[in-house]
Amino acid sequence: MKWLPKELETVKKDPIFAQIFKLFDNGLGFSARVIHGFLCRELLTYKDYELWFVFTRRPLRFSLLEFHAVTGL
Image 1: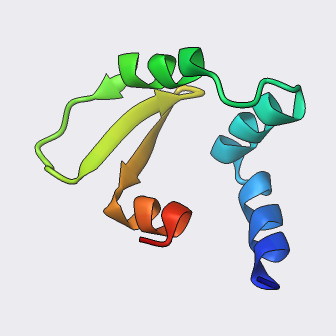
Image 2 (image 1 turned 135 degrees about the horizontal axis):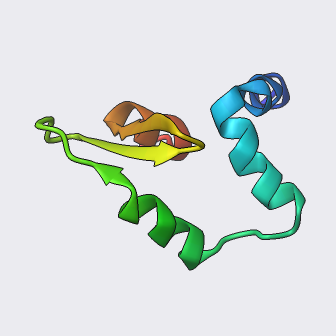
């Protein structure tokens, strides 16, 4: 996957996702507490296949499109 490092650098520079990568860079790794924090800040929407969260005071969407990008399914 030659595109991964290039894509990863692009995502790391994004102001929203940069905060998530800082968690990993500081050695946090997977944390159920962080996931729970996202779920507690979930925004209610009428769309069935999207979840919206507030992260760093910005809305963050996780939909089937992002699920596919992350998992390849």
